[in-house]
Length: 316
Image (cartoon, rainbow, N blue to C red):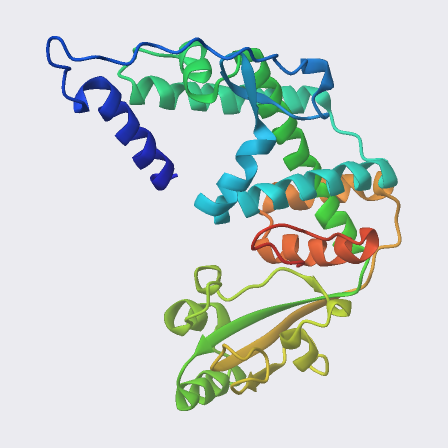
């Protein structure tokens, strides 16, 4: 939005004091009569379209703003498109498996989020504003509408966690620990230490350059059927066994990877209602990994033929 702000800033400066005052006796151009503009009837707007501003009674629509967002804030806009797609998938999958949430929990999550946000607003404004003042000023909506958005987002988040775990549990999964290093000799030394009984997690925290290092190299259980190169390469390893993968064998970006298979999980042939208690217990013990979301999205893309279209947006 930097370019837009620059243009608007120049116009404001020019109209507020950037132009010289006319000399006495010099002819000036008087104000023109405003053109007659017929406002677009709101009932004729496409479903979901929002009026975000008005000029001379004519609405500026959210659909008009969208192309500008792609050009000026592409990453944020792509993420918003993806989030709407995820929400649509959540709705479809919730109906398919019969997922029902405890509404009291949804409301409690909403109230907690609103309370935390109001605290941040009061801290940022020195106590001068709460949600009643901040939300209309910054977001251009009434607080009740904002509360509904927060509630919907919270409900979708709770449903998404459960849908991901449920869907992945229907497939045969494998869980691994991984240590990624750039030195072949170090990879061999780590492999030999693990073979002699050294703790894999401790070595991962000490040596690994992978994002999983703080968790001791532990990856979440992921479906074998997704064809993930890393999992393909360890398909012959039994739980507890360790292997070393060279450059390009698991991922072209990787160097050397020491991999240990933690466990292999059989698929759970259960309905959502039958699995619900186990899912809740698992969610209470850990947070979901982005890898699990990515795995779920790949499965949903095949099930529902998801295609993301737009400037700079590609499928998958």
